Image 1 (cartoon, rainbow, N blue to C red):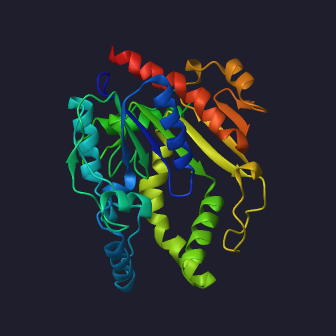
Image 2: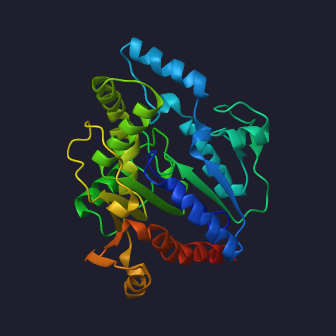
Length: 315
């Protein structure tokens, strides 16, 4: 964490809705006059698209499957290095992943490739990260403190573990505002199955096996981040998703609720939030429920004051 060179990270698996947050934060930064540098989590993959497919197939053939979630497929050490360097100096090395034709054409590079590593321009107000690993912790307990709303026994255990030698990546410790975006797990699986089935022909068994191969890395590297977040946005469908392996349409935001958990609820004016977010309600003292269609409004009214607060601390 850094008062002078802060970092905001939105972390969540693919299909969780992190792109919506990127769009809203872009608008917040523009309206509030905040100069940001955006880092896409895909740019810290180890392999380009073609090489990654080959590496995934190879790992399955060797019966040692890897996934997009784990360290075998991602430069987690380099990502922490960027966060550490930016928090200290306001700069660092970053690159872009050519995720679509428009971006690839702009750089003159193939889709699925990377731009060269380049120095982040000096003078930005903050770094904004969106991707899979913004709060990732590898083989260690994070130095990031848990809030009072967490289980006190877990807090005590984490603090005890923090006194031991650090043996792995701890990306979360460098983040000033960590936001988690995650659907309930059945919805996440449905989105993965739907996406895979539209990109390639595969049997139901193959699609299910893809999910199972990813599960150990999801448990180790993705899920633990959501216990460290300052705010969690969890999408809950209002349609039947009880069997995710039966192909169906993905529930829309209008067919969903968002459950928003605040790590430090005393920092927030909930009467104001309830008045600004249509049909919102409190389910616990630290938890807000909203219709899925109100997500962008919720992100705006919750996160704009937080971004302003981070910038004020720099002055």
